[in-house]
Image (cartoon, rainbow, N blue to C red; front, side, top):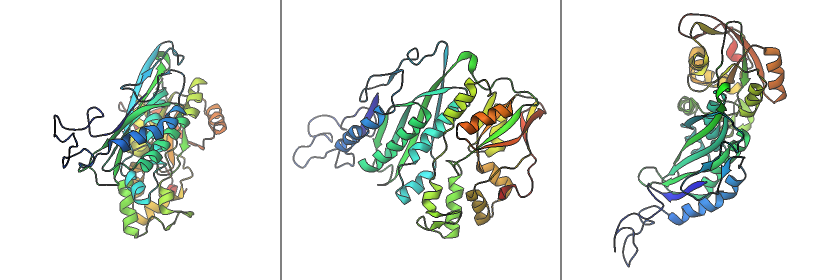
Length: 375
């Protein structure tokens, strides 16, 4: 496994060159710490997260944390004719709420979810994950909480956290600010890649989301600002939680339930509903000459009804920006068996509609009742 300590770029080493240069510390000389980068804090973070990474290990992982690269053995993971599938993503401006509320232990789950949910819709089993954590001034405790969330997300997805990178960059980020990026690699047997043949008559099942997930938070933050509510205020849509806590609910990870569905031969395609919502993401998994017809409403979480009312956001814009309560859409030829399997795996399942013949370019037709946003 690999994890570099606090640094700007290149190797884990001080900046500068020869004697009395900025990388040395003679009397009255400059040091890397004086320039704003604390190598010792980065090293302390590496030690603090080693147990978190070890707890996510799985068959195929070779070596331990601290090297220059991570090794993975596909044969040891049980694959015979694998195709590698890779994804990368971030958390977006949801991080601003994490920073302002001090809730750092869930954005790591979001980071993993945004990557591994994109793997499973390709039919790929997530194998390993790496993160990139950049900050202006490294707080070992805050970073440890973030990476603990990443480890929890990996545990939920069944993949290994094999390492990452910590970058302390004073002048690039303000003290207390940080940014995240994630990188996931999965594999699928060549003959099991998704989507497979989707045809008119197939059914669409929606899997319930855990809330806003990790898209649209620039609009969420603008709406909250307009309401003049503070993050510690009770959430209007969930009074038992603060507004900050309610909006920080992490993205649901659908990997294990969809992997089981796929292995049972019940999954033809799946669409991860992120930015672009149902209209923007469903066509990505449909062949030309078909369209998804969504005609049945589902139980919309109260957070979306509140956002629409508080921000005066039109229903069409809500559907275009947010998941609105549907985090994943499954295409199946056997909706009864698929629904039973997904419910047994703990998913909330909604029958949304069907696939029908359409124009040359795949599309979505929404035939929702006027009050769909009220659940």
